[in-house]
Image 1 (tube, rainbow, N blue to C red):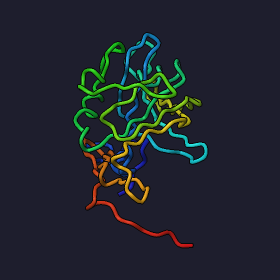
Image 2: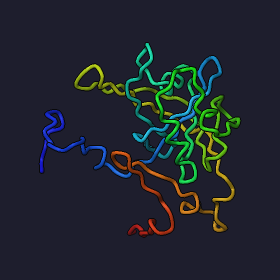
Image 3: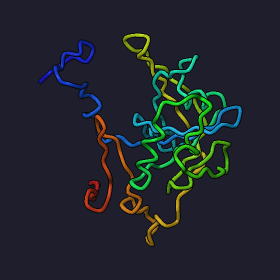
Image 4: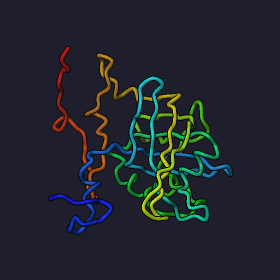
Length: 207
């Protein structure tokens, strides 16, 4: 089949685009607003974009608040920092719960029963149950205009200035045991993928 996204002429029950760029890592973004209220939300339009300096991005759609911003984007732009927590198989339910649309003064960390812990370099909290935390300094926002007023996205870039790794997922050879962490990624619709010993494999790059 062939279709043009703008014409929405795919003829399928749901737009298949999100099921084609897969799997997508989940940026489980924790922030704090200027009043000290914690926020936590997962973003599947997320990735690392460069290595030196290590930089990540997440894309936030239009929000329901008066300023039309999602809480994560508003908090990052106001405070200049955020933390990306690794979403894993063990925290899949809490990750899903934290995606609910709630008022700006809601604390998703408390609502999901997760444990906030202090970061080292930023004020935004880390999630104790996550095996990896990336403390990030806000760099800039790039706005992507859509086809109408409801299709506006903010791509938030942050430099990773501090990294926490649970010692239990570092192997004796000094490499990260990804299969032990069992990170999850977003597929399309309501589907996800899990990385474990059965789903991962190794390829040695040619010289």
